[in-house]
Image 1 (spheres, one colour):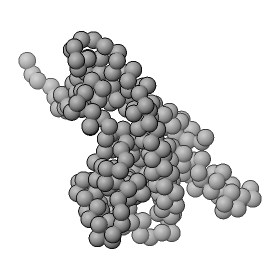
Image 2 (cartoon, helix red, strand yellow; image 1 turned 180 degrees about the vertical axis):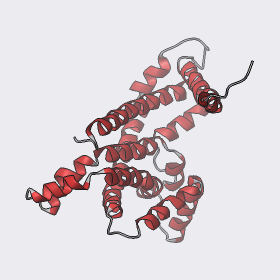
Image 3 (cartoon, helix red, strand yellow; image 1 turned 90 degrees about the vertical axis):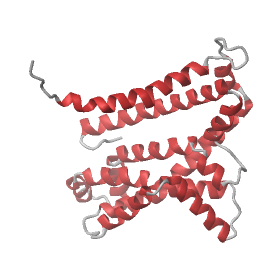
Length: 262
């Protein structure tokens, strides 16, 4: 029997990778979330504690707060940068984009430790401000690149049409360019917000241990109460799933409407 190579066979290594390193660990997290550390039996106590304890609720609140703050700062910096780079008259856009990508080649933990050394050298006390600065520094490219790509896809004739109808540059930006770039904004915001609320290496390193987000709580709880830690991770996974559904909605809207209008 002659063997025929199919394209689907090329996806087999990736399927095995997903099964062993993603799907199986998720099953372990789901299993331990409903297992009591004391008795080893089935329980809902871990989930109830993750959703109702003052520690978990307070940590989730601060995680969402600082995640939203990081996302807003990245958007305030990233959108103007992406807009300028997307203009044809800007000749150095390729070089600038490369400069934003190059730091991503270096492990983020090394970059974080280097940033901590800079703060020490400048006598800047570690705290919430330095942690947010570190998150913005690490996640800013994830905001710029999707917006930049979305802006490049905009039909320039639509912008010219809005100007012909009397829109000044500000009105054209707010009523035409910004809505048309909504998929990139949503994608970039999710790519910044989700790692911001779940990170622990950046916040622990750059805050001096003065505050913690949900990633830090999961890491700390894993040593003393694996079930509670798994339950917290399940809540985080639910948020990630929700973000994926939102991203899918806007990406699908972009494909069906030719750019994605709000």
